[in-house]
Amino acid sequence: MDRATLQLVAVGAMFVASKYEEVVPPNLPDYKFIADNAYSKNEILKMEKDILIALEFDITVPSAYSFLLRFKKVEKPTEKLFYLAQYLIELTLMEQKMLVYQPSLIAASALYLAKKILLREIGKWTPKLQ
Image (cartoon, rainbow, N blue to C red; front, side):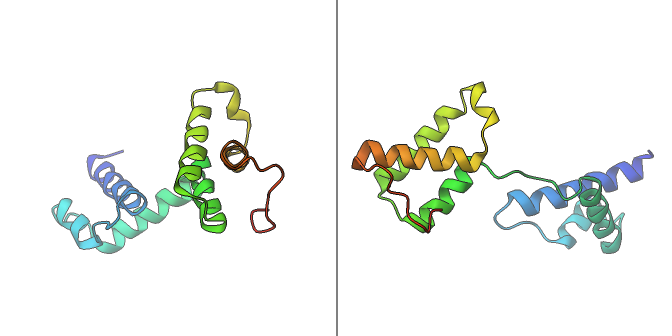
């Protein structure tokens, strides 16, 4: 791979990553400027597309925390309950045995256990949460 192509791949990768990571990602003219106008907008967009196709658009996996945030929208738990569930999720990060469980199951279990600990509720799983 020549140097010009490698630089275009780097610009395309930064373009993809910034859309994923940044709250306000830089726009396309900014990336043209970063590359010293060596590439056209179409070349950068094509490289972005090529990178995403090579990755099969598989750039992330949902985490247990993202599922907990979804449960939070539905359930509207107290702050204390939410933070306890979040803590329980974080405890699973230190246990290699927990890697076999789906993130959605870990989040649901953490919320269930937090409710049981703080509210002494058993089996209180609403249809919305299901």
